[in-house]
Image (cartoon, rainbow, N blue to C red; front, side, top):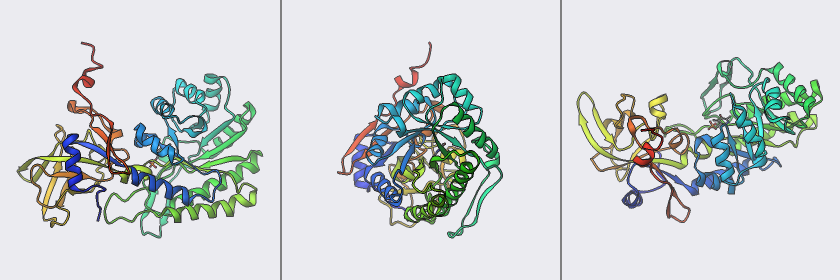
Length: 418
Ligand SMILES: *Cc1c(COP(=O)(O)O)cnc(C)c1O
């Protein structure tokens, strides 16, 4: 059972001021979750979460996370400048980019960000485009092949194919990059890897930690260079479906602690900071897309038309992703109607739900589409001339704040050369 963080009366009051559709975020949920994360990793003295900005590039959200101790993980010029404008600079920025233009490395370096290199050729590229290599540099590892945890305790498969991913360096390239960086003047080295996405297993981070810890020890033996931090990146998932289990961040923290203790401590590296770049886990459950039923249509199937569309939330259209839907005020009604819930794009994949069992929906009902706090608004686009929606923040004190206004026609036409 998934319960929205607002009730129908609250939402109707909000919608009376800010017309649907809009994305709504829950400050309390964001803060409580961030605090749970920091508690789970309190055993590591330098622990830091760098929030993956691409998940929710919204200043009010970045500022809340900043207050909770998080930095920013950026991968583009706009994300760097956004972080800077939120007062997040220096080593509180991790620049985990790929296929990166010189200008973006220059900006990241000007801001004092930690550069996370995606390829061995970038060592000399950096030297060329910024004239030096920074004192601190991170390198991204890609072990190739297939990554699997086998059958996890939760009974789920975790599988991904790093061998087909464009990211990171091979094992020999990693050694080469460390040696070359050291030659050019780098003093502090980090290691990064991202092997699986949206994992619902408490075993993923501990397994990844073991791989990176082992790697740090090996590279130290090979090159004499010690890692200054390890970056486990993103990939902790959220249960989009009501029947899926939640990750237990305390269990994950303890599993990673054991890797530090068993592998790094004997090599004299037991105190090195642990960094991560979670996006989805930090925000997805603490945002929802609020939309209103505007049409009902019965042909070969029953359709509910809503005033949001895939431009507001692309995941269902793009990946067939499941997002739970609550019909507000009908939480206890039987789910005895089968609907496709659709937007208004001239694309047949513009469906938030297909063959979904829901309570009978009437025109005017408010629908909450859950777990859109990450990769929701941020993946928005303007197809069919649809305008981006507003973003609202439900403050801890129960008030609601507009944190991004809806686009207007004037915004839409702004870039046209008539
Ligand atoms: C997308 C991304 C993340 C965040 O991934 P989540 O699955 O949202 O945790 C972290 N690091 C990098 C480099 C990414 O591209």
